[in-house]
Image (cartoon, rainbow, N blue to C red; front, top):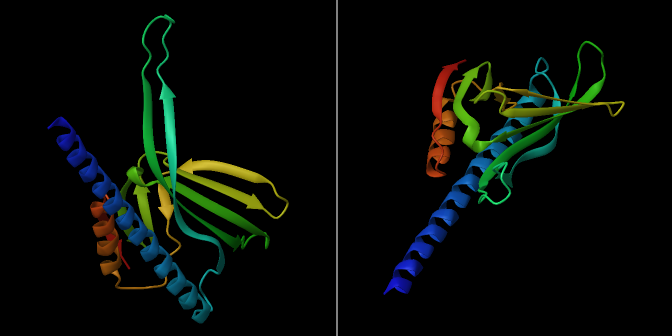
Length: 185
């Protein structure tokens, strides 16, 4: 009888995992579809800031393992593990003041995203310093820093609040609670 109960629990866990994976996949597909549309809109707008996509949106699994420090080596130690879903995108832009090109990669754990909002640019606001931004200039010099905003590189489309609603829907189906913030065109 116990093995039947364990099998049911295992099946439920696997189904939840498969469903969440499917929703994460839909989220990434939606972001990439909109980014491709944005590139077409930028082509048609001579005043738009130009950029090239080096790596479209992708989601990677990352496991963080931490071991609790104990002064007494005889004490039982706890190992903590967290499975993270890291969303990233990489673009190449021209610095308007120097005329030189650079690449910029943004990375964020889906669980750290708190809001989707728009104020000219569509962005995710996150927990403090949750977004890792890495820039590499033409000389290969690398700089990394952390911020609270993940820019989606989307700003040409107007009256697109339905895009925010779809993002929120996919986040919630994946098990993440993300709110819609201010949406201003």
